[in-house]
Length: 315
Image 1: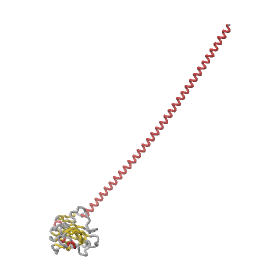
Image 2 (image 1 turned 90 degrees about the vertical axis):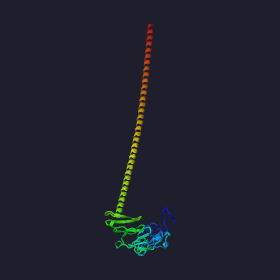
Image 3 (image 1 turned 45 degrees about the vertical axis):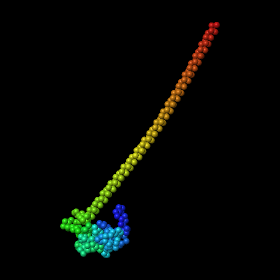
Image 4 (image 1 turned 120 degrees about the vertical axis):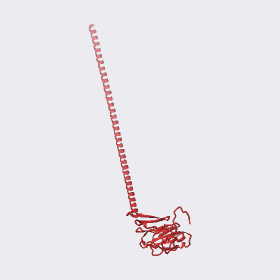
């Protein structure tokens, strides 16, 4: 088998899994594999075959070998599908829909929970549970040499190398338990709120916060869009005002040009009228000068005629 696989790869022979999975120290188990009936307790195991931890399967008959490929584990019939699955260091626990608990592997410390079980076994052993716990186990966990289970009413059951005293838990309600490094970790209800209810409340609050953030983001986006729209409208209005002012300035400039042209035309007209008046004045002065000259000439001729007449009289 390949060691130290750093990149996840598909497990050969397990195309589709629709049941629980469990990993122990040296073995793994998969329940509900494609190709098996969905109403039967189908289970596959692979890993180290020591102490019968892989269960009753053809490839795990020899102790101390590594079974690299998943192999079908034989389980009692009429048990229904597998509801819970747990794997420890050297043993496995299976909880079926019938409510029964089955175990196989090492029983050195009694971790299989069956008084009649041998030191180790590949054959599934039905656990000897108290009558009040039959069919009511909701959580199960396997440690190195122990097994721990939690019932629907919050009772904690443990067997094997570790025995949990129930006296300390009389006033508490345990909802889940796991074995980590030989020590139990319990999820205990505080007050009337269950863990599922707490998770539901947290999830609901998370969704509410996400909805609030989404609404706030949409509102901010709408405000930003509105501001951009108003800004764009203001820019358009400003551009329209600038165009209007430019048109007014152009019209005023054209009107000024027209008035200047009219003024220049008026000045030219006045100049021409003045020139015409001056021309007429000059002509009139010239005519008067000519008439004055003619009168002087007439007077000179009349004088000359008198002088001539006087001379003639004197003679």
